[in-house]
Length: 509
Image (tube, rainbow, N blue to C red):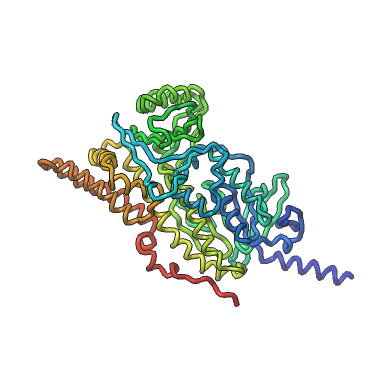
């Protein structure tokens, strides 16, 4: 009996010897029904870290395909955020494709049919090109927390999806392969969970991304968020973009009685809310630039005092393909939220991943699965890179600048979009996610630059105007080409030349 007991102890030590983590392992884990059991009994097909927009939608999608999914979310209470409130029509189509369109129901979501652009007292209406779609297809704006709770409820309703609250502290690695996670439960217990594939969707503040990608996070500005009550926007069911000084201001409805205002403040430092600097800034600098119809509601919201800020992050996707693990959502890729494209990219990525995983019945061969899923990074590019590039380029164009060439580019952009027809329908179809074509984006961007150049040179060019025009073209190139380079020229424009594009599902031996 003593020899048998000793043998058991030795086997257990050998079992844990190859697994590396940041803290000591524990011997109990949660099974799919929430009860504690052995590690072998708790082996899910897929672990998802985070239950935000990406994590919740992914859990429902994979669960619906028959996968055993364990979702670990840091906080299951309703989130309260000032971004992630506008879903573009392209994102809504992906929501329909995933069978999640009912998640925008019963949360007082508002339909959005386009944008209104304001500059120096002038304004123009930009409508989404929705003529070819069903009448229900449009953008949607809502409270982010309500939307996420609806998706969590829907994913948790599947019997093979287990959603629990806990903080993932580390990934479990064995011989270069991610085998699962270690996490701390709400009541303080440290547990481990194992799965064939771990998908990290823990958002923009991810503490796990460093081992799975090369994060280069840029913070060009911050949003100052307000909620305006009973505010009547000049264009109902439209997002409003004011090309203000020093940077844009956004207004869009988030319920039948509330309007979200986001004031962009360039740089990483914002006026203090506590000592009243922020309220003074909003009243003296921002308020005079908002449309007269919104002014009183805006000042009332500032006086009410519920002012919040959030840094705007951008981060190109730079993954390290790791057997047994995958990054998704804001943990993987971020862009400036000016264009409201984040959820569209996340939902599009989920559709791509779902289609890649569907032919696979066995996910246990981690190295082979990792090699196969390299195609994910190429297949996602047309949608993701178009929205990412547009967000970064538009933000730089829309910001005020003392440079005359940048001023001309900003004015040319407003006038180009005001032309209507293909000149507005083309860019707005890119913005909405309905036409995610990188080449179309580049053509329209330089069409704006050439339009600005033509305005300078006609009817009679002067040396000064020629010089400003040359700097305008140079500045436009300096805006868009670095963004394209970060996205990857080959994957963005020539994905069919990337070998991973043609990677076939691994065959079961």
